[in-house]
Amino acid sequence: MKNKFVSLTTGLVVVFAMVAFFISCNSGETGNGLDSGKADSIKQMIERGKYLANDVSGCIDCHSQRDYTKFSGLIVKGTEGKGGEIFNEIYDIPGVVFARNITPDTLNGIGKWTDDEIANAITKGINRNGDTLYPIMPYPHYNQMSKDDIYSIIAYLRTLSPSNNKVPDRFLTIPMSVAYPVLLSSSLENNIKPDVTDKVKYGAYMVNSANCMDCHTPKENGKYVISKLFSGGFTFNMGSFKANSANITPDSLTGIGKWNEEMFLDKFKTCRDPAKYISNPGKVNSIMPWSLFANMTDSDIKAIFSYLCTVPPITNLVEKYPK
Figure (cartoon, rainbow, N blue to C red):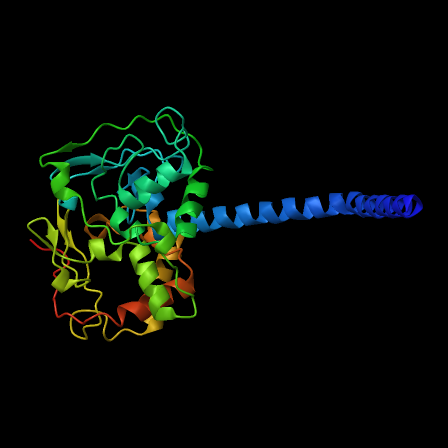
């Protein structure tokens, strides 16, 4: 009995030794593979976040300084994420709101914020101090984006060059409680990004992520007229002149009903030419950040068009430059 026990013990020792040998021989390769896979995953996450923050959701557009002597208010190089852009009566705001510093600066930016704290600000409009953000920050839209996309944006924001730009506090003429909107999603865990093969559903997701509704829907008494969704007529007071947003419903008379996919795509592609942003366009300027949106992928732009073709057509003849 004793001999059998010794033999069994010896056999197990040999087996364990062999397993340990193979693990040690392969640990370097396996470990490097895992590290490489993780690095690739993080890289892809940051790239997705960069695309969304710059070319879709407008994070860099609003949180940088823009030069309105250039077409569409070209972003001033080196100011990305530093904040300070002013939002006032031009955007139908009761007071003045300043875009915050979203660079990873630890004093005046979001360098000390956790990912979850940043996500709360982006999707719920609540900052790490518990203060409520005015909804010129389109968190009602971001509230419906997928968790992966939101945290990809956060990963990208952490790669921005830190800026110590201190942004002034806002001033509102109404209580913030009056302005806080209804949020449709209770948790990012519930949000699903549609597959790109479903062009209409994915297009709807991209339209929401790009906040198209906010600028292309008219307002009355400070509230969007939902019955006129996407029909244009939101007025921007540019000081020396006013400009109305376009009707992007599929109405054949006053909207994009007679457009085809290529015509819609070409509208963006023409704004990919750097020469368009060299001189001061004067009155034909645009508040829409074409320099960013134009860089969306062709497939995403086409998906947006596919969705817009499904919204109710609304006859609304928009005068581009009202008197």
